[in-house]
Image 1 (cartoon, one colour):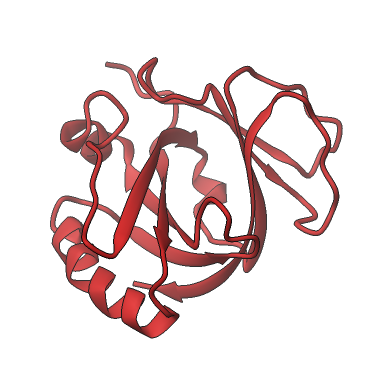
Image 2 (cartoon, helix red, strand yellow):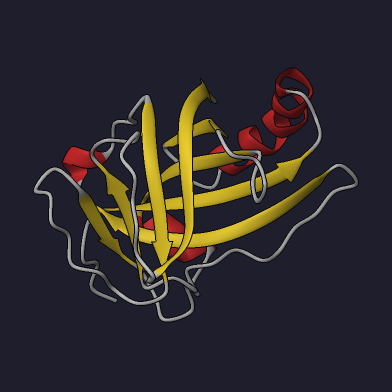
Length: 162
């Protein structure tokens, strides 16, 4: 397979009633284990409106390592007693976009949407198995976004790098 970009960004959502410290303590051993699979960066964000997700993980992988571990572009479903995991899959990432923002507005869309602002970022899915064709990072995380196309929108603030 020819890689479109050298990196892939993976988003994993978590719905839980656990407080931040307890969640981070329970997630850290798993994060350590996936680092041995080739992941380069793991950043945990808290989601402002917690109806769907409480936390979201922004994971940066070299493309080859990600696709070796997840050839469909989407890891299998997971759940623990206290945490429900929602896999958003992998999206192509340019090298200059590796660094994490402190705050971000993520949108996951089933059909592509043309951006109006130059500062906004659009990423396409890695494989056809990824449920959302496009994910967007809007330049102003506080801006209102209205689109009948969006499936999920998350306002996120950085919590911790693992």
